[in-house]
Amino acid sequence: MSNDNISPRSGHLYLVGVGPGDPELMTYKAVRILSEARIWAVPTAKENGMSSAQQIAGQMVPDNGRTILSLCFPMKKVFLGQETDDQLLAAWRRSADEVIRHLDRGEDVAFPTLGDATLYSTAFYLLAMIQEQRPQIPVTVVPGITAMAACAASQSSPLALGDDVLAVVPAAFEDDRLRGILANLDAVVLMKVHRRIDALIDLLEELGLIDCAVLTERSGMPEERVYTDVREARGRKLHYFSTMVIRKKKVQVSNGTHAHAL
Amino acid sequence: MSNDNISPRSGHLYLVGVGPGDPELMTYKAVRILSEARIWAVPTAKENGMSSAQQIAGQMVPDNGRTILSLCFPMKKVFLGQETDDQLLAAWRRSADEVIRHLDRGEDVAFPTLGDATLYSTAFYLLAMIQEQRPQIPVTVVPGITAMAACAASQSSPLALGDDVLAVVPAAFEDDRLRGILANLDAVVLMKVHRRIDALIDLLEELGLIDCAVLTERSGMPEERVYTDVREARGRKLHYFSTMVIRKKKVQVSNGTHAHAL
Image 1 (cartoon, rainbow over the protein chains, first blue to last red):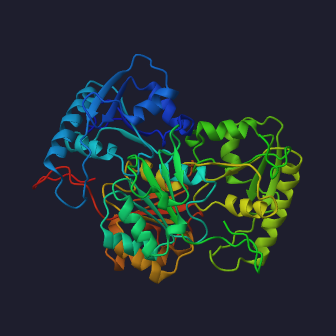
Image 2 (spheres, each protein chain N blue to C red; image 1 turned 90 degrees about the horizontal axis):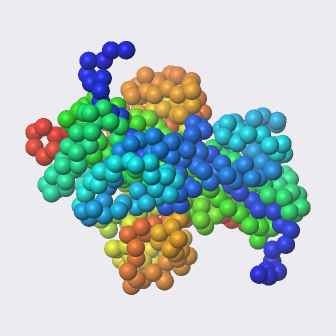
Image 3 (cartoon, one colour; image 1 turned 60 degrees about the horizontal axis):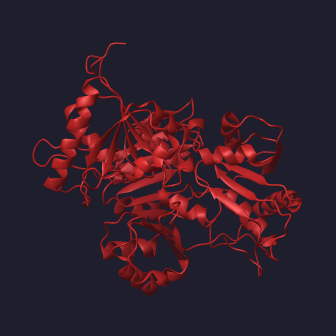
């Protein structure tokens, strides 16, 4: 097969979701791809920091002498449809250049990313930067288990059932918009609530939803903590990996007076 | 440890997400639990039918002489917060009784379920029915890869990024509510669109969103088909496993005139 747009020597880029923390929640596909790749590009918030994704993947994939490219991404909010912060763009561009150097030599690069690669992953900023310079590189994205699914599962509870409409809200929310979402949708996941927990508890109380909420800190990790009464989280300094799940409706499995709801 | 509420001989119930179709998208935890369980309870739409979840799991977990309990659930819509269809309740109750018979004998039962156990899985109706009679049975829920994540991944595209709010809408939607969700949220996943595809295409055209939509039929299965122009699906008889992803906003990786968006 000839394709003039792809250099025959270009390496393959893999964006690999490694799940929320428990290494056993990695997929066979993620472990296979990470085992085969001789180069891992890993996101870190600080220079030479160890990424959470790398720690999780490293428990399932023994070190085979692979090369680790430590890519430093500052933790900054990205607002889609607006101009992106220049410092962030510069960091992504440096990282993209480093990955491209390896791809151009025909070396495959795998980028392990926390949770699901398709949900709020920095992997896609890196990919967009790489594609700007190498539009035709071969890419494979491997989905992963989300933190929200792990939170619900650890409570033996669904995220959504039946005709529930589910909303997933990332950290960067405005109060009015959040109020509308909480009022109108049936099930809401709020990610990275650590900075806003007190204001959020006030809002849930105002909307009469406080008893529908469960908060999980570091889901699936050894230090996991679950707040089934989210009021107990007021005033606390929560970890960055804090997810709140709010479910309004229940399924009725008995009609009549002795209904049992889930 | 003594616990008077749990019979010392009660079996353990496992609700296990097996992912969207590709057996390699099963997690290690799902495969381990399904390998260890001597009894699988599998949902089928017809008497003695083979379930999709069982087919997927069977490719990763060799038959070790396990017992298959084939549970027949009619495919009916469930509206939460309303009385549940009596025929459905009767089917769930029969299934629950069958599973309870085994749990009461101290036998573990695993229920493989398509996609993610925490999202729209019949597993939770069964669980609610079982808990009505056996409130204290030990339960473990194993999350799985969702069809929507697999759809986005196969397009090397995110489901949501940055400050995107994502809505997940199951099959059972009313037009006015759907219109509001499409107008107000940034990324929308519509599951099981097979019955409504023509009306949905009309609505997306009216809202100017037709070019933001991608439709995937049987994601991750050998017969997968992707419509990057969803208009081509008009008038077609789509498979039951049809998922549409609509994303309005793009990330800007360059500021200024030569922006590259993802």
